[in-house]
Length: 67
Image 1 (cartoon, helix red, strand yellow):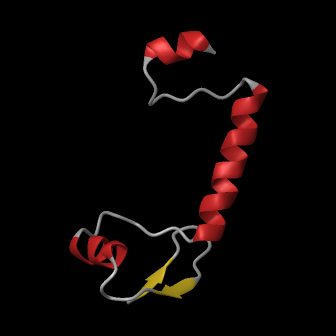
Image 2 (cartoon, one colour):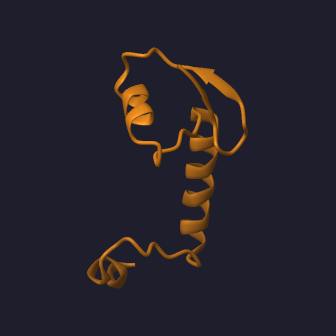
């Protein structure tokens, strides 16, 4: 299965029997992000969290009080 990263538009090949390939094929709302882009975004997120100006909105209010 050929897939394209939503951020960098590189085309990757996945084995048709992998769970990720089945998820992308059966549920078109799910998108694929390559490992390079995923790592870059996670590193930038961690760096922004360390500045103290970044707030996770998915966390509970109880966790926000700890920081």
